[in-house]
Length: 398
Ligand code: LMR
Image (cartoon, rainbow, N blue to C red; front, top):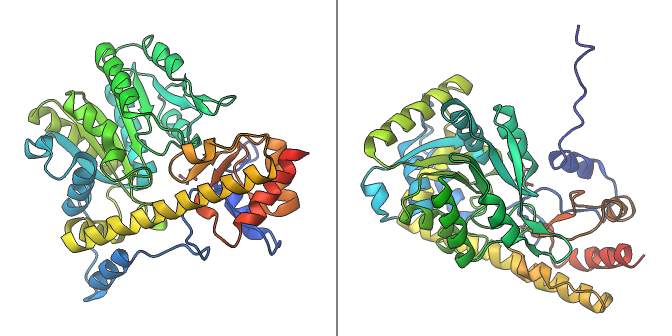
């Protein structure tokens, strides 16, 4: 009966995690999945989260179903983080926000919404992008295309080509953008470049869909949201999916949000209603535990401040690892330019290694990175960085 079912080849990122766990090499290093490990190689529980957990546990409360849109405090937390605490559009009620099952859940609900209400729209993603972007939109029967983004030869952005491409798109086509810490390349647009992109979006009446999974890991909470806030300032309709997996270190709790910025209150109500309907037919309502943590941390001034400090400490440690990696590699291979490592932002570095070199790192050294050459810099620490740099130098030299 099920013989005709295709085998699943596995996910290129999540599958690496399983391979890494099964590897018996005592020196193995996990630089595959986008997870932040601390200086001791441990997945941290943030102090602000510990406090929130203590409050949730005392007393242990009943667990009713949440509303389809999730907890109001979770939704408010998403809105203030993305748009700014005092944003006028929030006061004016022009943002429909639902709490979602991680950033992936937000993308899925958004993709379904686009499929239902903008059936002609195609969705364009950066070349390259996070693989699941393509899978999620195609899974909702939205046709996906790619726009030029990364110039491998020069480790830079093909900005002019990208803009020229956007100029060819049709009204209501969706462009999926990464406001900060581009996944997988780590190469971000400057603020001036964002202005140019958004002018084209406005002129051609495109729909920007901004996926922000690393807010706080680039420059800071506000600068990382520049593109979002600029789009709002320009009066553009806008979809934003956000994730708390990385910046609250709540990966397994699956907490995120989907926000849609609308021109009028009436449209906001309509959109909010349809987002609820979409949630109902996929998973009914979100789980409550992670949402309660988000609610507590985002809405308690002291915890919020503590949280921002904890995110910046993670950001700074990653930046220090970039500097160190660059300097060791430069010393080992002086005729090669490694500037890209410190020009990239967030958790990832697109190293430019060939798939064969990536495979050698895995087989010979137990060092795991994604086959497209993406390294999670957040998996480096002072104990493993020399080992990794030496191994990289080895495979680059041969
Ligand atoms: C990543 O890109 O590694 C993360 O976003 C985790 C994932 O689900 O792929």
